[in-house]
Length: 88
Image 1 (tube, rainbow, N blue to C red):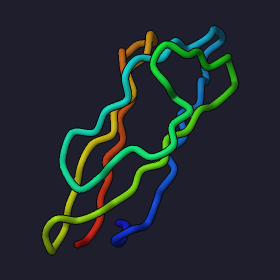
Image 2 (cartoon, rainbow, N blue to C red):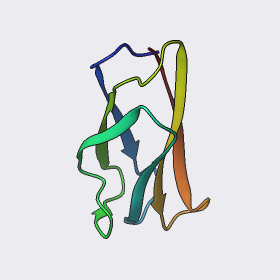
Image 3 (tube, helix red, strand yellow):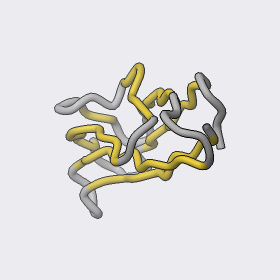
Image 4 (tube, helix red, strand yellow):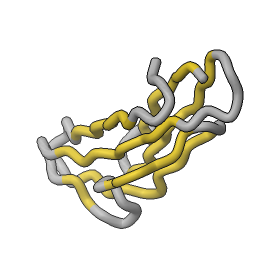
């Protein structure tokens, strides 16, 4: 869980043996926003390399909050997701 105003970095590592072609980065839910992002749509991540997304948390209500960060790509399955959580 993260507190108000705290940024968290999510890293996507290509463990495959071919370039990973990235699609859109999105957040399903409220209170979280993408900051700096090197996992940009249309870019590639070489085998063994990584990209990262900084996520900020600004709660709009008190209590536990959650969202899902998804990065689309050409590998199977067609995206990678991580659950984000924080307390407002």
